[in-house]
Amino acid sequence: MLEFRERWLFILVVTVVVWPLVLLAQNRNAPMARWWEPVTNLPNPWIGEILPLPEGRTWGSTAGVDIDPTNGTVWIIDRCGTNACVGSDLDPILQYDASGNFLKSFGSRMFAFPHGIHVDLDGNVWVTDPLPTDGRVAGGNVGQQVTKFSSNGEVLMQLGTKMVTGRGTNTFSSPSDVVVGRNGDIFVADGHATGTNERIVKFDRNGIYIKEWGVPGFGPCGSNQFSSLHALELDSQGRLFVGDRDNNRIQLFDQDGNFLECWFQFGRPSGIHIDVTDTIYVADSESRTDDPDYGGPPSPFERGIRVGSAKDGSVSFFIPDPDPRGGSSAAEGVAATDDGIIFGAEVGPRQVIRYERQ
Image 1 (cartoon, one colour):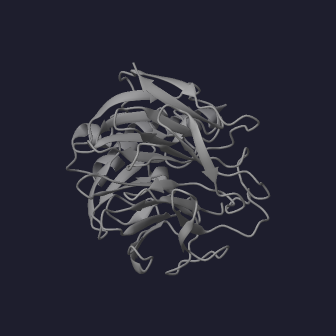
Image 2 (cartoon, rainbow, N blue to C red; image 1 turned 90 degrees about the vertical axis):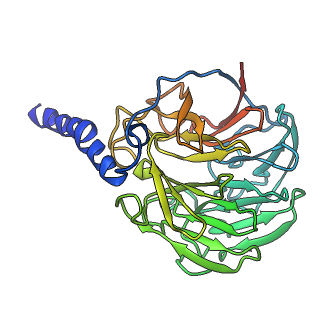
Image 3 (cartoon, rainbow, N blue to C red; image 1 turned 45 degrees about the vertical axis):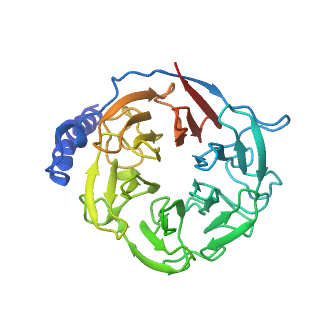
């Protein structure tokens, strides 16, 4: 009994005393709300409903979702009715209109574990395919690549070497997300889980390697250390937002890899979306206030979707996870239309929720 009490006393001290001091040291110049305040007690004006699939098909884990900037349609990653696509004939890439009507799909037999999805300014669809280090995906002859498609499913480019794990200029260890800048430069988050590269790789518009930055670690902001690189997004200023999930933070960089600042107020970021007005949507699917040993340092946050401003880092709304103490839940991927319709892609419950503002 004493050992049990001592363990939880230690956890309490770390969560309430030590962790805030660590965050303060990492971001001394940030306003209080940016580095510590667990922003949860906020309005939630959205009502959600499950997005339907074509008849005869059920949702698998849905880690990724994005909005096509050319027409406002919604692109979603579905792991083929389960949590992987090896051996399945189902299409993992699905397109919907903003009202929730299914339009089309493609990508059958091309992915092992489709994860991140991004639609660039020309309407091309980019999808990452990491091979998890925990062995959950076995068999198949695909993985460790980033693929660029036309909106009709034609393959336009592939980055990485199929089924080859490495840290070279054309190999990845677990590419989790991708985003494309206005000039066509490509940024890949290569570090889905512990034991992977934990780096950001930059390519030019033709897929030619330019540079990289990042190593595994739990170091302070600006140290170029990441743990579970899970999300990338760009704002109107061209700043690169990096979801450093197991470090409970978003790190901001310029497009040359120079560190700008660190934000903690959005929780443990699994997905990030920024719209044309610089409204930021951040999905926290991993925080568990009653299980501080899960996924990295103790987190004071509740999981759900936080909505705020990418301009100043303020948080205005919070859509809570209806099952905050269950397994990996809530939205892992998040996207929103310009008029505020939110789509949350959920891994644990295996569904996509469409949220309309009331």
